[in-house]
Image 1 (cartoon, rainbow, N blue to C red):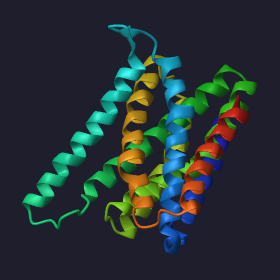
Image 2 (image 1 turned 30 degrees about the horizontal axis):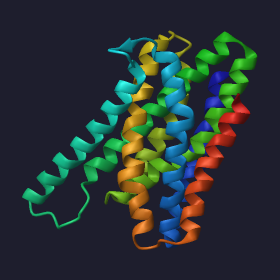
Image 3 (image 1 turned 90 degrees about the vertical axis):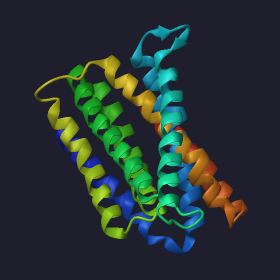
Length: 241
């Protein structure tokens, strides 16, 4: 059953990516929505789940929060290092390093793989838990596909690479769900990963996606797309609970 649900998530991810590439004439709205979706996924979905699963504290701070901050800092350092290297090789001022987009998209693929594993584990626990997780995974995989395509293309990667990362992200939940037929991933490592990944996504949303969305189009419509993205993820999380 988990694999069948993951196939639905596969289709939803592709639908999200298709939507992102079809609205190029409203790029600021796409980025505003993507930033809101990413903020909602991090604050309302990933971080609470990570804090619940990751367990203990380190010097009085929950491990998930430490890894969250670590993920934010790693994303910042990686982007700065890549930007410096690109400038040293003659890159234009303000040009974005394509590797950053590919790295961020790869992190999205890892998140979708974890979604599939969580989906399979939920169905192992029981039908009710499986249905709740299935609703959350299928719905927010639309946002995952949207964000994966947007992140890859935003940093200057061509359409072929963006589509490649989109298909990888779509296939990841299926692979993750199928893997639970063979083994079960311990809860604490999964929670630790989600905390770290949440920090990476928050950096990209706050430092890259949202400023880009509002730079040339500081319109109310862009802001409403951002708020709507957060509200949409809140609705998904609430329905799943």
